Image (cartoon, rainbow, N blue to C red; front, side, top):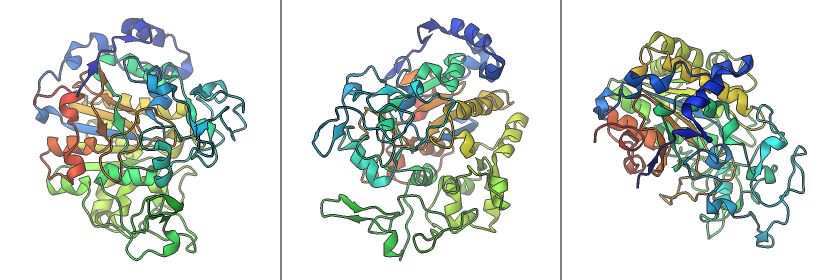
Length: 473
Protein backbone atom coordinates (compact mmCIF):
# COMPACT_ATOMS: atom_id res chain seq x y z
CA UNK A 1 0.00 0.00 0.00
CA UNK A 2 1.32 3.44 -0.92
CA UNK A 3 1.60 6.05 1.80
CA UNK A 4 2.86 9.38 0.52
CA UNK A 5 3.52 11.97 3.17
CA UNK A 6 4.45 15.59 2.79
CA UNK A 7 7.86 16.92 3.87
CA UNK A 8 7.00 20.63 3.71
CA UNK A 9 8.64 21.17 7.10
CA UNK A 10 12.25 20.08 7.18
CA UNK A 11 13.67 19.30 10.63
CA UNK A 12 11.25 21.71 12.27
CA UNK A 13 11.72 24.62 9.85
CA UNK A 14 9.82 25.60 6.72
CA UNK A 15 11.62 24.92 3.45
CA UNK A 16 12.16 28.61 2.76
CA UNK A 17 13.90 29.06 6.09
CA UNK A 18 16.04 26.00 5.47
CA UNK A 19 17.08 27.40 2.10
CA UNK A 20 18.08 30.71 3.67
CA UNK A 21 20.16 28.88 6.25
CA UNK A 22 21.97 26.99 3.52
CA UNK A 23 22.92 30.25 1.90
CA UNK A 24 24.90 31.12 5.00
CA UNK A 25 27.11 28.03 4.83
CA UNK A 26 30.85 28.38 4.94
CA UNK A 27 32.85 28.38 1.71
CA UNK A 28 33.63 24.68 2.20
CA UNK A 29 29.92 23.88 1.92
CA UNK A 30 28.86 26.20 -0.91
CA UNK A 31 28.19 23.27 -3.24
CA UNK A 32 25.26 22.32 -1.00
CA UNK A 33 23.17 25.27 -2.17
CA UNK A 34 20.56 24.20 -4.77
CA UNK A 35 21.17 25.30 -8.38
CA UNK A 36 18.07 27.49 -8.21
CA UNK A 37 15.16 28.21 -5.89
CA UNK A 38 13.04 25.18 -6.69
CA UNK A 39 10.29 26.30 -4.34
CA UNK A 40 9.42 29.18 -6.69
CA UNK A 41 10.16 27.40 -9.97
CA UNK A 42 6.63 26.38 -10.96
CA UNK A 43 7.69 25.29 -14.43
CA UNK A 44 9.96 22.46 -13.30
CA UNK A 45 8.14 21.70 -10.06
CA UNK A 46 4.86 21.04 -11.87
CA UNK A 47 6.25 19.63 -15.11
CA UNK A 48 5.28 16.06 -14.27
CA UNK A 49 1.56 16.46 -13.57
CA UNK A 50 -0.23 13.45 -15.00
CA UNK A 51 2.16 13.16 -17.92
CA UNK A 52 2.45 9.87 -19.79
CA UNK A 53 5.50 7.78 -18.93
CA UNK A 54 6.84 8.52 -22.41
CA UNK A 55 7.62 12.03 -21.12
CA UNK A 56 10.43 10.47 -19.10
CA UNK A 57 13.45 10.85 -21.34
CA UNK A 58 16.32 10.04 -18.99
CA UNK A 59 16.87 7.79 -15.97
CA UNK A 60 20.08 8.24 -13.96
CA UNK A 61 20.94 5.78 -11.19
CA UNK A 62 23.65 6.85 -8.72
CA UNK A 63 24.74 3.75 -6.79
CA UNK A 64 26.40 4.44 -3.43
CA UNK A 65 27.77 2.09 -0.78
CA UNK A 66 26.91 0.23 2.36
CA UNK A 67 24.44 2.03 4.60
CA UNK A 68 21.03 1.03 5.89
CA UNK A 69 18.03 3.36 5.99
CA UNK A 70 18.12 3.76 9.77
CA UNK A 71 21.89 4.29 9.65
CA UNK A 72 21.48 7.44 7.52
CA UNK A 73 17.80 8.39 7.19
CA UNK A 74 16.45 7.28 10.56
CA UNK A 75 15.65 10.92 11.38
CA UNK A 76 14.09 11.91 8.06
CA UNK A 77 10.79 13.77 8.62
CA UNK A 78 7.75 11.60 7.92
CA UNK A 79 9.76 8.41 7.37
CA UNK A 80 9.59 5.25 9.46
CA UNK A 81 12.82 5.74 11.34
CA UNK A 82 14.41 5.69 14.75
CA UNK A 83 11.30 6.96 16.55
CA UNK A 84 9.39 3.80 15.57
CA UNK A 85 8.66 1.23 18.26
CA UNK A 86 10.67 -1.44 16.46
CA UNK A 87 13.78 0.72 16.65
CA UNK A 88 13.90 0.20 20.42
CA UNK A 89 14.53 -3.55 20.25
CA UNK A 90 17.99 -4.42 21.66
CA UNK A 91 20.55 -6.66 20.02
CA UNK A 92 20.77 -10.25 21.27
CA UNK A 93 23.83 -12.24 22.30
CA UNK A 94 23.34 -15.70 20.71
CA UNK A 95 25.51 -17.38 23.33
CA UNK A 96 23.00 -16.49 26.07
CA UNK A 97 19.95 -15.64 23.95
CA UNK A 98 19.67 -12.50 26.07
CA UNK A 99 20.24 -8.81 25.26
CA UNK A 100 23.84 -7.63 25.56
CA UNK A 101 24.43 -5.73 28.81
CA UNK A 102 26.69 -3.32 26.89
CA UNK A 103 27.46 -3.11 23.20
CA UNK A 104 30.65 -5.03 22.43
CA UNK A 105 33.06 -2.80 20.49
CA UNK A 106 36.30 -3.48 18.66
CA UNK A 107 36.67 -0.04 17.04
CA UNK A 108 38.94 1.77 19.51
CA UNK A 109 37.30 5.10 18.60
CA UNK A 110 34.06 4.00 20.26
CA UNK A 111 33.58 3.44 24.02
CA UNK A 112 33.04 -0.09 25.27
CA UNK A 113 30.40 0.87 27.85
CA UNK A 114 27.62 2.07 25.53
CA UNK A 115 24.12 0.81 26.38
CA UNK A 116 22.47 -1.74 24.11
CA UNK A 117 20.61 0.75 21.92
CA UNK A 118 21.18 2.60 18.69
CA UNK A 119 23.76 5.37 19.14
CA UNK A 120 25.13 8.42 17.33
CA UNK A 121 28.37 7.39 15.60
CA UNK A 122 29.42 11.01 15.04
CA UNK A 123 29.97 11.53 18.76
CA UNK A 124 33.08 9.38 18.30
CA UNK A 125 33.76 9.35 14.52
CA UNK A 126 32.51 12.52 12.75
CA UNK A 127 30.98 12.10 9.30
CA UNK A 128 34.07 13.63 7.70
CA UNK A 129 36.28 10.87 9.16
CA UNK A 130 36.67 7.23 8.17
CA UNK A 131 35.68 4.52 10.61
CA UNK A 132 38.61 2.36 11.63
CA UNK A 133 36.79 -0.82 10.67
CA UNK A 134 34.28 -2.09 8.14
CA UNK A 135 31.05 -3.86 9.07
CA UNK A 136 30.34 -7.46 7.99
CA UNK A 137 28.12 -7.69 4.91
CA UNK A 138 28.17 -11.17 3.42
CA UNK A 139 25.55 -13.51 2.01
CA UNK A 140 25.08 -15.97 4.86
CA UNK A 141 25.89 -13.51 7.62
CA UNK A 142 23.18 -11.04 6.60
CA UNK A 143 20.56 -13.75 6.81
CA UNK A 144 21.76 -14.52 10.33
CA UNK A 145 21.72 -10.81 11.22
CA UNK A 146 18.12 -10.46 10.01
CA UNK A 147 17.24 -13.56 12.08
CA UNK A 148 13.93 -14.33 10.42
CA UNK A 149 12.83 -10.69 10.60
CA UNK A 150 13.68 -10.09 14.25
CA UNK A 151 16.53 -7.77 13.17
CA UNK A 152 18.38 -8.48 16.43
CA UNK A 153 21.66 -10.20 15.48
CA UNK A 154 23.56 -7.47 13.62
CA UNK A 155 26.02 -7.03 16.48
CA UNK A 156 26.40 -10.77 16.97
CA UNK A 157 27.29 -11.65 13.39
CA UNK A 158 29.82 -8.94 12.69
CA UNK A 159 33.35 -10.28 12.48
CA UNK A 160 35.18 -7.16 13.55
CA UNK A 161 33.17 -4.03 14.16
CA UNK A 162 30.46 -5.54 16.42
CA UNK A 163 28.72 -2.61 18.12
CA UNK A 164 29.47 -0.18 15.29
CA UNK A 165 26.71 -1.92 13.33
CA UNK A 166 24.15 -0.54 15.81
CA UNK A 167 25.16 3.06 15.21
CA UNK A 168 23.63 5.79 13.05
CA UNK A 169 24.52 9.17 11.52
CA UNK A 170 22.18 12.08 12.38
CA UNK A 171 20.08 12.68 9.28
CA UNK A 172 19.95 16.47 9.67
CA UNK A 173 23.75 16.65 9.40
CA UNK A 174 24.04 14.79 6.08
CA UNK A 175 25.29 16.97 3.20
CA UNK A 176 22.92 15.30 0.74
CA UNK A 177 19.91 15.90 2.98
CA UNK A 178 20.89 19.56 3.36
CA UNK A 179 20.82 19.83 -0.43
CA UNK A 180 17.51 17.95 -0.74
CA UNK A 181 15.87 20.34 1.71
CA UNK A 182 16.29 23.15 -0.81
CA UNK A 183 14.59 21.23 -3.63
CA UNK A 184 12.01 19.31 -1.58
CA UNK A 185 9.20 19.75 -4.12
CA UNK A 186 11.23 17.56 -6.48
CA UNK A 187 12.25 14.86 -3.97
CA UNK A 188 10.58 11.61 -2.96
CA UNK A 189 12.23 9.52 -0.25
CA UNK A 190 11.32 5.81 -0.34
CA UNK A 191 11.38 4.46 3.21
CA UNK A 192 10.55 0.81 2.44
CA UNK A 193 13.18 0.14 -0.22
CA UNK A 194 15.26 -3.01 0.34
CA UNK A 195 18.47 -4.09 -1.35
CA UNK A 196 17.65 -6.87 -3.74
CA UNK A 197 19.67 -9.84 -2.50
CA UNK A 198 21.31 -10.95 0.74
CA UNK A 199 25.00 -10.13 1.00
CA UNK A 200 27.51 -7.59 -0.14
CA UNK A 201 28.42 -5.23 -2.93
CA UNK A 202 29.44 -7.80 -5.54
CA UNK A 203 26.13 -9.64 -5.65
CA UNK A 204 23.97 -6.54 -5.29
CA UNK A 205 25.73 -4.87 -8.21
CA UNK A 206 25.11 -7.94 -10.35
CA UNK A 207 21.44 -7.88 -9.35
CA UNK A 208 21.15 -4.16 -10.12
CA UNK A 209 21.79 -4.93 -13.78
CA UNK A 210 20.40 -8.46 -14.12
CA UNK A 211 18.24 -9.48 -11.12
CA UNK A 212 19.94 -12.87 -11.06
CA UNK A 213 22.88 -14.59 -9.39
CA UNK A 214 25.99 -15.61 -11.37
CA UNK A 215 26.97 -19.25 -11.68
CA UNK A 216 30.42 -20.85 -11.69
CA UNK A 217 30.23 -24.31 -13.28
CA UNK A 218 32.84 -26.77 -12.07
CA UNK A 219 34.22 -24.35 -9.51
CA UNK A 220 36.81 -25.81 -7.12
CA UNK A 221 35.39 -27.01 -3.83
CA UNK A 222 37.67 -24.75 -1.79
CA UNK A 223 35.64 -21.76 -3.04
CA UNK A 224 32.33 -23.20 -1.84
CA UNK A 225 30.58 -22.68 1.47
CA UNK A 226 29.25 -25.59 3.45
CA UNK A 227 25.81 -25.71 5.05
CA UNK A 228 24.04 -28.21 7.29
CA UNK A 229 20.71 -29.92 6.64
CA UNK A 230 18.86 -26.89 8.00
CA UNK A 231 20.68 -24.62 5.56
CA UNK A 232 22.85 -22.99 8.25
CA UNK A 233 26.36 -22.11 7.15
CA UNK A 234 29.06 -24.22 8.77
CA UNK A 235 31.93 -22.97 6.58
CA UNK A 236 31.88 -19.68 4.70
CA UNK A 237 32.84 -19.41 1.05
CA UNK A 238 32.61 -17.35 -2.10
CA UNK A 239 30.09 -19.74 -3.67
CA UNK A 240 27.07 -21.62 -2.43
CA UNK A 241 27.49 -25.42 -2.33
CA UNK A 242 25.65 -25.66 -5.67
CA UNK A 243 27.89 -23.17 -7.45
CA UNK A 244 26.21 -19.77 -7.27
CA UNK A 245 28.65 -16.88 -6.72
CA UNK A 246 27.41 -14.94 -3.69
CA UNK A 247 30.43 -13.26 -2.09
CA UNK A 248 33.14 -11.07 -3.59
CA UNK A 249 34.82 -12.63 -6.62
CA UNK A 250 36.47 -11.14 -9.68
CA UNK A 251 35.67 -11.37 -13.35
CA UNK A 252 37.84 -13.12 -15.88
CA UNK A 253 37.56 -9.87 -17.85
CA UNK A 254 39.60 -6.75 -17.17
CA UNK A 255 39.99 -4.76 -15.11
CA UNK A 256 40.61 -7.28 -12.37
CA UNK A 257 43.22 -7.65 -9.64
CA UNK A 258 45.83 -10.35 -9.45
CA UNK A 259 44.51 -13.13 -7.22
CA UNK A 260 45.90 -16.05 -5.27
CA UNK A 261 44.71 -19.00 -7.35
CA UNK A 262 45.08 -21.28 -4.36
CA UNK A 263 42.14 -19.55 -2.67
CA UNK A 264 40.24 -17.93 -5.53
CA UNK A 265 39.49 -18.16 -9.25
CA UNK A 266 38.24 -15.69 -11.80
CA UNK A 267 34.51 -15.98 -12.46
CA UNK A 268 33.79 -17.04 -16.06
CA UNK A 269 31.75 -14.68 -18.24
CA UNK A 270 28.03 -14.97 -17.62
CA UNK A 271 25.63 -15.47 -20.52
CA UNK A 272 22.22 -14.67 -19.05
CA UNK A 273 20.63 -11.32 -20.01
CA UNK A 274 21.16 -7.94 -18.39
CA UNK A 275 19.18 -4.72 -18.60
CA UNK A 276 21.94 -3.52 -20.94
CA UNK A 277 21.13 -6.33 -23.37
CA UNK A 278 17.42 -5.50 -23.22
CA UNK A 279 18.07 -1.82 -23.90
CA UNK A 280 20.51 -2.50 -26.73
CA UNK A 281 18.13 -4.98 -28.35
CA UNK A 282 15.46 -2.26 -28.34
CA UNK A 283 17.83 0.33 -29.82
CA UNK A 284 17.91 2.40 -26.60
CA UNK A 285 21.30 3.86 -25.72
CA UNK A 286 22.72 3.49 -22.21
CA UNK A 287 26.01 3.51 -20.29
CA UNK A 288 27.63 2.41 -17.04
CA UNK A 289 29.88 5.25 -15.82
CA UNK A 290 32.47 4.34 -13.19
CA UNK A 291 34.84 6.61 -11.31
CA UNK A 292 38.42 5.60 -12.09
CA UNK A 293 37.44 3.28 -14.96
CA UNK A 294 39.93 4.61 -17.51
CA UNK A 295 42.85 4.41 -15.09
CA UNK A 296 41.90 0.87 -14.08
CA UNK A 297 41.68 -0.27 -17.70
CA UNK A 298 45.07 1.29 -18.33
CA UNK A 299 46.58 -0.79 -15.53
CA UNK A 300 47.08 1.89 -12.90
CA UNK A 301 43.89 1.88 -10.81
CA UNK A 302 43.22 4.28 -8.00
CA UNK A 303 43.87 2.66 -4.63
CA UNK A 304 40.12 2.86 -3.86
CA UNK A 305 38.90 1.53 -7.23
CA UNK A 306 36.70 -1.50 -6.59
CA UNK A 307 36.81 -4.18 -9.30
CA UNK A 308 33.75 -5.98 -7.98
CA UNK A 309 31.64 -2.81 -8.39
CA UNK A 310 31.72 -3.21 -12.20
CA UNK A 311 28.87 -5.67 -12.87
CA UNK A 312 28.76 -5.58 -16.67
CA UNK A 313 32.38 -6.73 -16.78
CA UNK A 314 31.16 -10.12 -15.56
CA UNK A 315 29.09 -10.76 -18.73
CA UNK A 316 30.11 -12.23 -22.07
CA UNK A 317 28.39 -9.43 -24.01
CA UNK A 318 30.87 -6.99 -22.47
CA UNK A 319 33.95 -9.20 -22.43
CA UNK A 320 37.37 -7.86 -23.32
CA UNK A 321 37.59 -6.76 -26.93
CA UNK A 322 33.85 -6.58 -27.58
CA UNK A 323 32.32 -3.50 -29.23
CA UNK A 324 29.67 -3.37 -26.48
CA UNK A 325 32.31 -2.97 -23.78
CA UNK A 326 33.89 -0.02 -25.52
CA UNK A 327 30.52 1.58 -26.26
CA UNK A 328 28.74 1.18 -22.94
CA UNK A 329 31.34 0.96 -20.13
CA UNK A 330 32.77 4.41 -19.53
CA UNK A 331 34.49 6.68 -17.04
CA UNK A 332 32.57 8.96 -14.68
CA UNK A 333 34.27 11.94 -16.32
CA UNK A 334 32.38 11.05 -19.51
CA UNK A 335 29.13 11.23 -17.54
CA UNK A 336 29.88 14.72 -16.26
CA UNK A 337 30.77 15.92 -19.75
CA UNK A 338 27.60 14.44 -21.26
CA UNK A 339 25.37 15.74 -18.45
CA UNK A 340 26.60 19.29 -18.87
CA UNK A 341 26.23 19.09 -22.64
CA UNK A 342 22.75 17.55 -22.51
CA UNK A 343 23.93 14.44 -24.39
CA UNK A 344 23.36 11.75 -21.78
CA UNK A 345 21.93 8.47 -23.09
CA UNK A 346 18.39 7.62 -21.97
CA UNK A 347 19.70 5.32 -19.20
CA UNK A 348 22.79 6.02 -17.12
CA UNK A 349 24.26 4.13 -14.18
CA UNK A 350 26.86 6.08 -12.17
CA UNK A 351 29.28 4.36 -9.81
CA UNK A 352 31.53 6.81 -7.95
CA UNK A 353 35.14 5.92 -7.22
CA UNK A 354 35.71 4.34 -3.82
CA UNK A 355 36.80 7.54 -2.12
CA UNK A 356 33.47 9.09 -3.15
CA UNK A 357 31.04 6.23 -2.49
CA UNK A 358 30.53 6.50 1.34
CA UNK A 359 31.87 3.00 2.07
CA UNK A 360 32.98 2.61 5.71
CA UNK A 361 36.72 2.37 6.44
CA UNK A 362 37.99 3.73 3.10
CA UNK A 363 35.58 6.65 2.45
CA UNK A 364 33.68 9.23 4.48
CA UNK A 365 30.03 10.22 4.49
CA UNK A 366 30.77 13.91 3.93
CA UNK A 367 33.12 13.49 0.96
CA UNK A 368 30.85 10.96 -0.72
CA UNK A 369 27.71 13.01 -0.29
CA UNK A 370 29.33 16.22 -1.47
CA UNK A 371 30.42 14.34 -4.59
CA UNK A 372 26.87 13.06 -5.09
CA UNK A 373 25.53 16.60 -4.75
CA UNK A 374 27.96 17.73 -7.44
CA UNK A 375 26.68 14.99 -9.77
CA UNK A 376 23.08 15.98 -9.10
CA UNK A 377 23.85 19.63 -9.75
CA UNK A 378 25.46 18.68 -13.07
CA UNK A 379 22.27 16.86 -14.06
CA UNK A 380 19.91 19.58 -12.83
CA UNK A 381 21.88 22.16 -14.76
CA UNK A 382 21.66 20.07 -17.92
CA UNK A 383 19.46 20.89 -20.93
CA UNK A 384 17.92 17.44 -20.32
CA UNK A 385 16.84 18.07 -16.72
CA UNK A 386 13.13 18.63 -17.43
CA UNK A 387 12.65 15.02 -18.60
CA UNK A 388 15.03 13.33 -16.14
CA UNK A 389 14.59 11.17 -13.04
CA UNK A 390 17.57 10.59 -10.73
CA UNK A 391 17.55 7.62 -8.36
CA UNK A 392 20.16 7.76 -5.59
CA UNK A 393 20.38 4.53 -3.63
CA UNK A 394 22.82 2.22 -1.86
CA UNK A 395 23.96 -1.18 -3.06
CA UNK A 396 23.31 -2.79 0.34
CA UNK A 397 23.17 -2.01 4.04
CA UNK A 398 26.86 -2.72 4.62
CA UNK A 399 26.09 -4.76 7.74
CA UNK A 400 24.52 -1.78 9.51
CA UNK A 401 21.35 -2.51 11.48
CA UNK A 402 17.88 -1.50 10.36
CA UNK A 403 14.72 -2.14 12.35
CA UNK A 404 12.32 -2.93 9.46
CA UNK A 405 12.16 -6.60 8.51
CA UNK A 406 12.51 -7.16 4.76
CA UNK A 407 9.69 -8.95 2.94
CA UNK A 408 10.21 -12.63 2.17
CA UNK A 409 10.16 -12.72 -1.62
CA UNK A 410 12.35 -15.67 -2.60
CA UNK A 411 15.42 -17.58 -1.44
CA UNK A 412 17.76 -14.77 -2.55
CA UNK A 413 16.19 -11.94 -0.60
CA UNK A 414 15.58 -9.10 -0.48
CA UNK A 415 18.03 -7.93 2.13
CA UNK A 416 17.82 -5.06 4.59
CA UNK A 417 16.30 -1.64 4.03
CA UNK A 418 18.45 1.02 2.32
CA UNK A 419 17.87 4.69 1.44
CA UNK A 420 16.40 5.43 -1.99
CA UNK A 421 15.93 9.04 -3.04
CA UNK A 422 14.05 10.05 -6.19
CA UNK A 423 14.95 13.49 -7.54
CA UNK A 424 12.95 14.65 -10.54
CA UNK A 425 10.56 17.26 -11.93
CA UNK A 426 8.16 14.27 -11.92
CA UNK A 427 8.64 13.41 -8.21
CA UNK A 428 5.47 13.28 -6.11
CA UNK A 429 7.54 14.69 -3.20
CA UNK A 430 7.35 13.56 0.39
CA UNK A 431 7.85 10.03 1.70
CA UNK A 432 6.71 7.00 -0.27
CA UNK A 433 6.22 3.91 1.91
CA UNK A 434 5.52 1.48 -0.91
CA UNK A 435 7.58 -1.71 -0.54
CA UNK A 436 10.26 -2.07 -3.23
CA UNK A 437 13.59 -3.75 -3.73
CA UNK A 438 16.40 -2.57 -5.99
CA UNK A 439 14.97 -4.47 -8.97
CA UNK A 440 12.13 -1.91 -9.03
CA UNK A 441 14.64 0.29 -10.88
CA UNK A 442 14.79 -2.35 -13.61
CA UNK A 443 11.00 -2.48 -13.74
CA UNK A 444 10.85 1.30 -14.25
CA UNK A 445 13.32 1.05 -17.15
CA UNK A 446 11.50 -1.93 -18.66
CA UNK A 447 8.13 -0.21 -18.45
CA UNK A 448 9.33 3.10 -19.86
CA UNK A 449 11.02 1.57 -22.90
CA UNK A 450 8.62 -1.37 -23.32
CA UNK A 451 11.28 -4.03 -22.74
CA UNK A 452 10.72 -7.73 -22.07
CA UNK A 453 11.01 -8.33 -18.33
CA UNK A 454 14.19 -9.98 -17.11
CA UNK A 455 12.37 -12.30 -14.70
CA UNK A 456 9.55 -12.68 -12.18
CA UNK A 457 11.37 -10.78 -9.42
CA UNK A 458 11.41 -7.67 -11.60
CA UNK A 459 7.88 -8.17 -12.86
CA UNK A 460 6.57 -8.48 -9.30
CA UNK A 461 7.92 -5.12 -8.13
CA UNK A 462 5.70 -2.17 -7.26
CA UNK A 463 5.70 0.57 -9.87
CA UNK A 464 7.96 3.55 -9.12
CA UNK A 465 6.40 5.47 -12.01
CA UNK A 466 3.03 5.81 -10.24
CA UNK A 467 3.97 5.59 -6.54
CA UNK A 468 7.14 7.68 -6.20
CA UNK A 469 6.67 9.56 -9.47
CA UNK A 470 3.55 11.25 -10.81
CA UNK A 471 3.03 9.65 -14.18
CA UNK A 472 -0.38 8.66 -15.45
CA UNK A 473 -1.46 5.06 -14.82
